[in-house]
Structure formats: structure tokens, C-alpha cells
Image 1 (tube, rainbow, N blue to C red):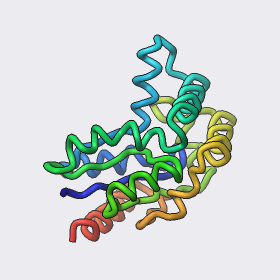
Image 2 (cartoon, one colour; image 1 turned 135 degrees about the vertical axis):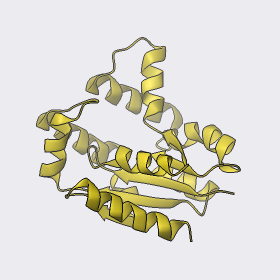
Image 3 (cartoon, helix red, strand yellow; image 1 turned 90 degrees about the vertical axis):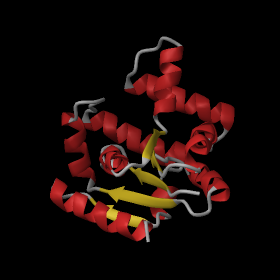
Amino acid sequence: MKKLVAIVGMCGSGKSIASEYFEKLGYKKIYLGGITMDKLKEENLEVNPENEKMMRERLRREYGMGAYALLSIPKIEELIDKENVVLDGLYSWDELKILKDKYPDIKVISIVVDKKIRYERLTTREIRPLTNEEAEKRDISEIENVAKGGPIAFADYYILNNGNMDIYNSELEKIKTEIEK
């Protein structure tokens, strides 16, 4: 079996950048949040913070708090024997438990950023920008309703992403080297 890496962090921490880093190294990326987008498109609903939240909560009511892990397992299984895989955006404690049970060697990287810096980044990002108020509402919802803190707290590796891209990439390189030993 190949390597399985999951990237965790609050909205705007740099999870997608970390996932893209691993993808450039040949890892196949599975964007867990893509399940939300796919379901919204299937129902012809606009992609916006309110609809995303509604869909995330509906999927979790239907499949349980481990919904995104459960719905991603077929994609992981399709790839993991032949390819290294990076999961972009692991969210809940239940998702982590499901994945740890199925893939005991999974490595979790937590990206941590000061809240003020994250919120500034979120207002200017090109894809799905958020106001400070929207970002705070999302943070609170993810902490209270999704148990997002568990995977962040229980990660194997941590990166403080308050600086520039050179520092961030250097930290990613160190972790990648450790994972691939």
C-alpha cells in the first residue's frame, strides 16, 4: 500500500496549498469538500456559504459525522494500491477515526494560522472568499457542529503558516521527507 496523507486545518489555513504541494510530487489528490460541491451541483443549487453549510450538515445527518470519510473511501480504494494519496480537507473527529481504522498508517498534517491572518487571507482569496463575519460563523460552526478540533489536535505533524510561501514550502518539504522514510 502507498502513502496516505490527510491535511487538516481551519478555513483559510492553507490546506489546499499543502495538498497541491503533495500533488506536484505525484500524490493523487482527493478534495473531501468536493463532495459538497458535487451534491450542490447535482441539485442545481448555487455554491455559496449558506448552501455549502446546509449540504455539509445534511450529509452528516444522513451518513453520520464520518460522512466525508465514508463517501471518500471508494476513491481512496481506487487509488491507494498504486498511488500515494493526499486528502485535502479532513474535517471531523469521526472522519479521522474511520480513516485511522481503515488505514492505520495515515499521516495527518495540521496547518495552523493565527485567526487574524486567516481572516485577512480569506477576504482576498480568489475562490470562495469570505468576509470576516462569514469566516467567524464558519469557524464556530465547524468547531461546535463538526468536531473539527479533534483532527487538528491529534495530527502527526504541525505547520505554523503565518509567514511567507518559502517558509511554508520548506516546512512541507521537511514533513514530506519524514513521511516518506
